[in-house]
Amino acid sequence: MIEVSSAAAVAWQFSAREHAARQARERTTLRIIAVSFFALAAYVGVDAVRALAGTGEAGRSVPGIVLAALSLAVMPFLSAAQRRAGRELGSASAVADSRQTLLCTYLSAVLLVGLVLNATLGWFWADPLAALVIAAIAVKEGRDAWRGKGCCAPTPVAPPSPGTEADACGRDCR
Image 1 (cartoon, rainbow, N blue to C red):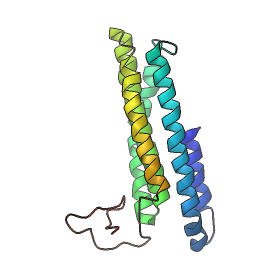
Image 2 (image 1 turned 90 degrees about the horizontal axis):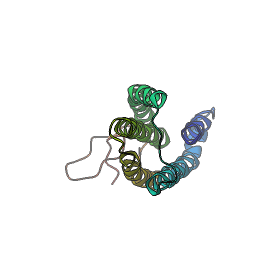
Image 3 (image 1 turned 90 degrees about the vertical axis):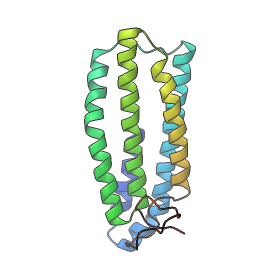
Image 4 (image 1 turned 135 degrees about the horizontal axis):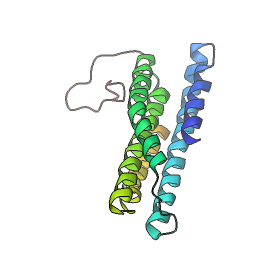
């Protein structure tokens, strides 16, 4: 649901017929994506704490392992395609949405490893511990999206000079 809200915001932004209207919607879309990162961090964090406290411990699940593996096989390619399209469009919101898809890829990897470790070794704590790290990354990505970090210019410019910070599109934002 959280990932869909982020993608829906980007779809809304690009549903505007005119380029100027799409550009005007960029900041609002970034804010929606930021909130979705924060929601993801809260959801993952609360679930991880519950699991570590013993009130939400994961069971052994072969279907869960299969679904996590399939997700892990598909999502990196989806994220890369989103990022490439966002860079070509000069859209910080599309790049931010690709980051959310990439974060969900990390969650799938953590879930897969956690489910396998739980099923084979009984290490129920491995998945929630790693999920807390993912939640912290989600907060950072949410802050970046809220601040509008991403593609800082709608048209390509020269590559950043050494020692400067590049945006998500590889452009010097300073």
